[in-house]
Amino acid sequence: MQNVDVMNISEEPKVNYLTNGFSLKSWLLTKDHKRIAIMYLITVSAFFLIGGLYAATIRLELLTPQSDLLESGQYNRVFTQHGIIMVFFFLIPVIPAILGNFFLPLMIGAKDLALPRINLLSLYIYWVGGILTLWALMQGGVDTGWTFYTPYSTTFSNTYVMAVGLGVFINGFSSILTGLNFIVTVHTMRAPGMTWFRLPLFVWANYATALVMILGTPVVAITILLLAIERVGHVGIFDPAIGGDPILYQHLFWFYSHPAVYIMILPAMGVISELISNFSRKKIFGYEFIAFSSLAIAVFGFLVWGHHMFVSGQSLYAGLVFSFLTMVVAVPSAIKMFNWTATLYKGSVSYDAPMLYALGFMGLFLIGGLTGLFLGSMGLNVHLTDTYFIVAHFHYVMVGGTVLGYLGGIHYWWPKMTGRMYSEFWAKISAMLVFVGFNLTFFPQFVLGYLGMPRRYASYAEELQVLNIFSSAGAAVLGTGMFMPVVYLILSLVFGQKAEANPWHLPGLEWRTASPPPTENFEKMPVVTWEAYEFGEDNGLDHEAVRGKELVEA
Image (cartoon, rainbow, N blue to C red; front, side, top):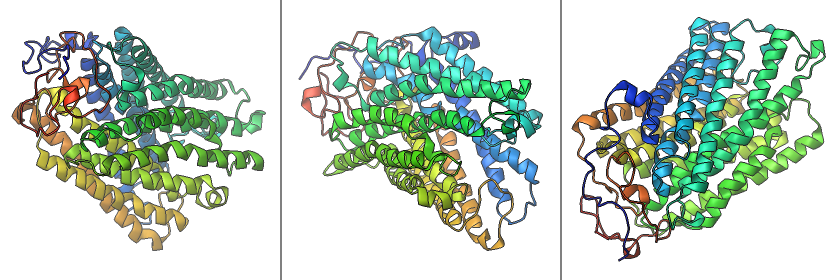
C-alpha cells in the first residue's frame, strides 16, 4: 500500500478548531475557515427558519379560497419577504458558505482558504446585509415581489424598497468575496499531487459557482443601484412615464438571476456527486464529463435569461433564440443525471441517510428539469407564465435540488464537522418525510398552474380548494421533516456517539484528518498519490471495511 504523508488519524488532536478557545472574541475575530463556516451555519439556519415561517403563513392563507387570514396587501408583503429571505439569504449562500467554506480547503489538502481575512469580511458583510433587510421587514416590509419589478418598485410602492434593496446590494459583496476566495484557493493551495483531475467533484462545482458569483453578482448590484437612482432622483431609467424602459430592468435582473439559479444548484450537484460515488463504493462514471459539465452550466447559464421574458414584449426572434438555448443548457445537467445513474449501476449501494437525500435529489431535480423544458417552449410558456406551474417548477429545482443537496451534505459531513454521530434511524425518517411532504406540497401546484391559478393571489376559484388543501397539508409534513434534523443534530452534540476520523471509510482527503479537524487541518502536508473516488487497496483503504471497523493503516 502507498505511503500517505498525513497525520496518524487514529489519534485525536489535543486541540481542534472547536476547543481552540471558547471566548466570543476568539470566534468573532477568527480566521479559521471552519469556525467561519459554523457561524454561517447558525446564521443561515436562522434565515431559513424566518423564511419557512413566511411560507407556512402563505399555505395557511391558501387553505381557503377567500383572503380571510391576510388582506391582499399583507399577502403581497408575506410572499415577497419569503422570496427575498429564501433566495438572497438562504439558497444562494447555504452550500458555498457552509459546506464549501468548511470542506473545500480540507478536500484539496490546504490549511485554510487563501484569503482568510477576506473570508471573515464576507461573513460580516452577510450579517450587515441581513440585519438591514430584517430591520426593513420589521418596519413594514416590501410588497414588490422578490424580483423588484419596475416601475412599481421605483414609483408606486410605498414600502421599504430602498432599505431591502440596500440589504440585498450589500449582501452581494459577500458572494463576490467568497467566490474570489474559492478561485484563488483552488488555483494556489492544492496539496502536492492534487492535480486538476484529482479534485473532488464538489470542488469543481464550487469552482464553477465561484465564476458565476464573480461575473453575475455585479450585474444585479448595478441594477439595484439604478433602481435606487430612479426612485430617489426620478431619473427616467425604467419608468416609461418619464422616458425609461421597464423591459431593460427585466433584462438586467434576469441576466443575473438565471445564473443565480446555478449558484444555488451547482454546489448541490457537487454534493450529490460525492454521495452517489461514495455510498455506491464505486468510482464515479465519467468524472471528466461531470467536471466539465459544471463549467458548461456556468457558461451557458448566462445565455438563457430571456426565457423569463417570453410574454414581456421582447422580439419573437429573440424568444426563439432563448428557447433554443434553454434546451441546450439542459444538456450538461442531463449528463450529470446520466452519469450518476451509471455510477449506481452495479454499485455496492449503502442506503444511509445522506444517500437517501441524494436519491431524493435525483428524483425531484429530474421533475424540476423536465418541467423547465415545458417553460422553455414559447407556446406552453404563454399559458403557464405567472401561474402556480412556475412556483412548482422553481421549488422542485430549488428546494428539491438545493435544500436536499444541502441536507444530504450536512448529514454526510456532520461527523467530520462535530466529531459526533447522529441518530441514523431518525435521519432516515426525516429524509422520507421531506421527500413525501415535498411532493405532496408542490406536485398539486403543477395541476393548479395548468388549470390557470395565478401565483401571488390571496384568493382563488373555489373549485381549486382541494388541491390547495393537499398542498398545505404537504407543507406541514415537509416542515416536520425539515425541523427534525435541527433536533437530532443538536442532541448529537451531547449524546451522539463519538465519530471516527473516517466513519464512512472513504478515500477523500477530508477523511484523513481527525474528527473534528485540528485548527491547521493537517499536522503534515498531505501528498496525494491516488485518483479521485478510487476505492480499494491502492488508496490505503479496505474496500470491504464496514462502519465501525478501524481504517486500515497506510
